Structure formats: C-alpha cells, structure tokens
Image: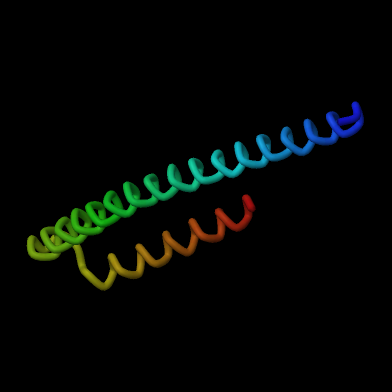
Length: 88
C-alpha cells in the first residue's frame, strides 16, 4: 500500500466517522424536538381546558358576555398574529 493510498483511506474513514456522527446528532436533535412537542401538546391541552372552564364560570356568574369575549379574543389573536408577522 502506497503512502497516497493510506491518506486516501484515512480521508474516507474520517469522512465516514464525521458523517455518522452528524447523522447521530441529527437523530438525537429530532428525538429531543419530538419530546418537547409532546410536552407542549400536553400543556396546550391543559391550558385549553383551564381557559374553557374559566370562561364558563365567568359566563355562568354573569360577569362576561360570551359574544363580547369571543370578539375580543379574536381581535387579540389577530393583533398578535400581525405583530408576529412584522417580526419575521
């Protein structure tokens, strides 16, 4: 085996090690992101249930008009969406 062949083999081996490591890192990152999305999904479900219960309590107590609340929430969401688009 010549010196040139040895260097070529080392380059190929090094490329394989680097590429395999990058693939493993990408897999680990994807798995971490999936776990975070699952956790956020659970939190969103809990928040939706909590907000729904609070809205019903306020309506039943006569503190809030459901229609007015709906329009105000829609306006706030639209405003936040516009602000988010302006940042991007």
